[in-house]
Amino acid sequence: MLIIVTYDVSTETSAGRRRLRRVAKVCERYGQRVQKSVFECQVDQMLYEEIERKLLAEIDQTEDNLRFYRLTEPHDLRIKQYGRFRSTDFEGPLVV
Image (cartoon, rainbow, N blue to C red; front, top):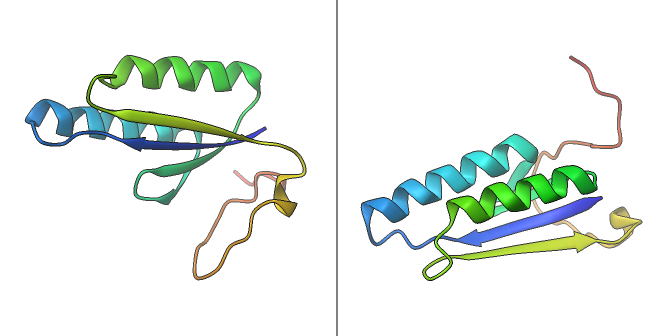
């Protein structure tokens, strides 16, 4: 499934700035950045629960905001894109 992860981490303190970096690193492990605080992740149910659990462990729920959007299939018909962006084709062949 394709999920969109967005976050808004308070960076008013040094602890907040560290949380922001840790949240971004978790997201980078599972998907691709499409905006500063927006990631697309192609995951199965197990990875979805894993990323959710890891991100919840990183944020401060009293100061930060974290959102998950699960896109229903076929997601390629539900996403319109304009402008320059090189995205990873999750459905295409993987070349290592």
